[in-house]
Length: 459
Image (cartoon, rainbow, N blue to C red; front, top):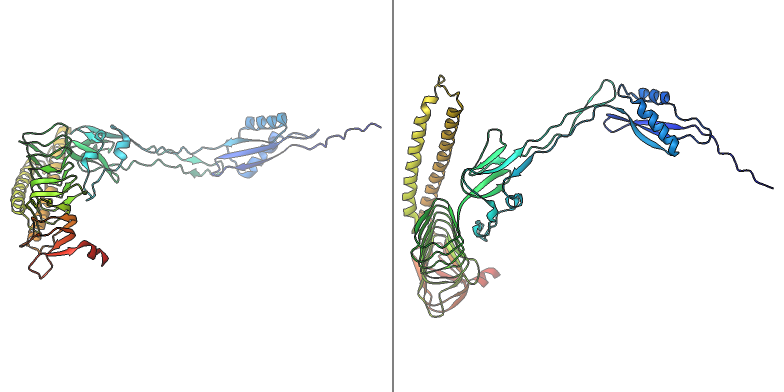
């Protein structure tokens, strides 16, 4: 006996409608009819949308197309059938650097004492005075949307983020803060949200003559006989320093050490290799960065102290190490007084130049006059800031010179006979080889004490 196939049950098509999260769109889901069931009617969908609260924007053609597509493919179909006003989200601001962005964003390299390692700075960071460093494409804030319901409600957009980039040291920004220009030649870096230039003058060739540098010197070549170099900032010497004279207002880094040279600095003097028969003076520390940076022969004076691995030689080479004595203090105080006088004179000249424009009746409408006034006022602010720095430095030198010395000489390796250690007023002549010791003058004592670093570490 043949078995008749069962007839498919007839089921009408069905649908449901719902809003998206912010009610700017209404969604329709259609389930197709089964068997001889009736399809969903457009009028029913429109009625359901209106009942749900849709006040405008119903797309009846989209409803028809959705019903037809569900019927044709015999499966559920979802579509947008009512459209309000979608929010247009903003676009974040973008900073366009005029030099490799990865170089600018990378942190500056530092030496162990916390000073900048100029010799390891990426040359791609370098800019000239007046060079455009970066431009900013402003953020786009977008526009709000509107709901489909009545009364329509605003739907907030996600605003674009501002760049928040500001001009830092040696950088000027345009009035709209969209262009940043170097005020000095040097290396570009970021300090938080500030775009800055570290003033520096890179020199690749050897120096053999007398010369002065108005900013930090980054010498990849050698400092050779005949060189008499004065630097207003830091000095980083990548090559040899032989029979030369070097004076720096900041710190000094001798990557290859020095021989028979005169080195003076207001900041730390850092040694990447040994120094032989040199005269070294600093108002801060002399620091040997590794075991190869020995001090042999000559005279080393460091007001705040010396950190060494080896001092002297097995041949008892006479070597004098002095701490707690500021041989450069008087000279620096004289220079400070002279620079303060120049700052005060220049501020007075600027005030005289600005006086005609102080009056309420003064004509400052022309762009040229406005620009000139802004330049003068910016220069006056820089001079006033510099004057405060000099006054602070003067007080610091005076206090430090008159305070009891806390300087010490630390030797992590060997100090040989023939070495004379002076701390403040008191001296100690090394007569036997010593290892891992610290030379100090304790408060209330009238002599140099020698203590083992190992014992201090045990305590």
